[in-house]
Image 1 (cartoon, rainbow, N blue to C red):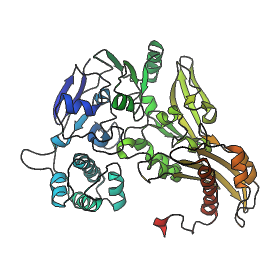
Image 2 (image 1 turned 180 degrees about the horizontal axis):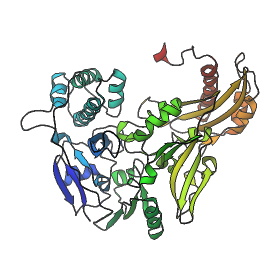
Image 3 (image 1 turned 120 degrees about the horizontal axis):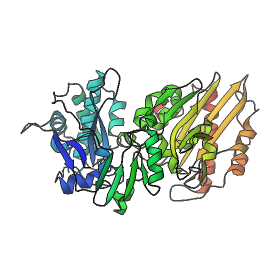
Image 4 (image 1 turned 30 degrees about the vertical axis):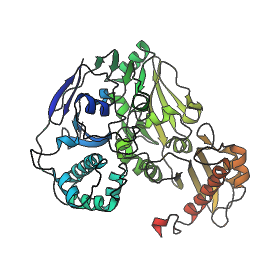
Length: 477
């Protein structure tokens, strides 16, 4: 069956291109839409940004088109099935520039122009979002919207100026788009990509095609066709599985389906765990957060995966679905080594269960990286604490970037629990961390730096949990 989607208002049924071809390659080579640029081919620079539209599935806005910015360099063609797509070529109306293009030009927001198409598309999505929310963005919203777009020659002031002007006026009316109904089986160029609608069908297909690659957001796997130029002969997508899209607050847990994207789950995460929400906002860019999933981040079992230390600190559980049904296990037991998990060959990750904080508890999480936005963690620490009568009575501490996998720090927990917390600085931090971890040095940081930085995060925890009046960042001064 063909990959079917709407491209700049035109219905497309693509039968000849491989489903694992990147959308960037497809746009440039098959459609000759060369306004979308290739910069880094790994989701960092934003030159390849396009807008992806899908109808809201439910609620007051059910059926209304929701646009999100996405990196076309990492996106697979099969991921467009059933969606609407806009590129920079699709914005202008005849000879009249779209307001985004006009305002950016009038604000001197472009010089060489290589990055400009991606910036235009990010601002287009921002304008659509603000129109739907009926309120102008503040500078924080603007900077977050542009965090995934690098400009090497213009400087961001005129680009931000353009964003302020743009979002102060309503977007022009656009024709209503009816997106196609996606197919369940996409086959072309020797590849087969399957898009099951239910968890039962996903598990069945997992058994039928044990060699198939599981595709969630493809923000990690997308590097294989983008950089290595290798496709996926067999792939199974989790995006349409309704059970994997649930976001639910149970009696004592926040449940996130494995296919919930960072963007979809952000509001629920921020409400339950503000510190985790702030961390999620630093995972890649908006383009990445529109694609990447919580389940996918866990499945990679990366030692520097941004969500994993928080899951460990919260003593989270993972639900696994297989032919025998569902089983639960602690995330701490699920991660077994460097990029290794306890997932059986015939299983899939179904959901994550994050235990809610109880009265008197707090969650703190901090990521250290060379850049604030758009950077991989050098070190990440997450801490769940309880303080009673000035004593640290409970601590669950976990770190990423300190070992071959994200891990809890039992020696640190044992050394600090029971200490007078409010009146005294904690002691024994360095010795405890040295007992828990033997980090290695690499191009991001030395082993000595990691141990020292981890100790300093514990001291930051002490200040944050006892002296909320003390500013811990330059921005707060």
